[in-house]
Image 1 (tube, rainbow, N blue to C red):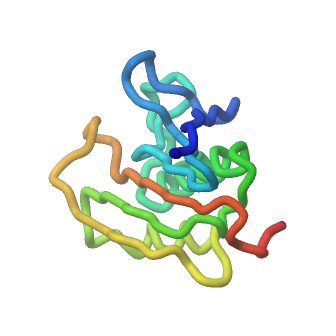
Image 2: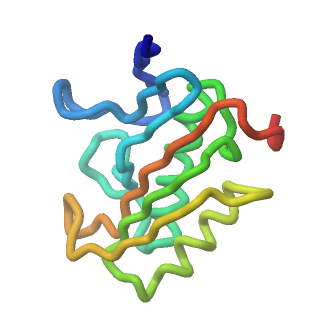
Length: 137
């Protein structure tokens, strides 16, 4: 028998309009985030001018959702990162280092031609196994 899915909402992360998507769903102890970006609370403003700043905003959103689900960032086991300019990937890695310790998540980095708005430079999805890490607890 499958475990029911539970939608995770954080007061720190703006929710999508109804019937669009869920920012985070948990099934059992596995949390899945949608592709998150550096959109501000109003859903229109983009926070951060470069990849480093946008990655920090986006990783913070992931952290807020994972914490709301009962986990810590070191419970994240997989990241998929979409960037519009692969030449600036080190800026994404620099931001990532501020959110993870120990064994970093498995990660896929893909360059795409565009994202939802021209000023959005990256989008990040995460999968976490809540409770798998002893770091940060």
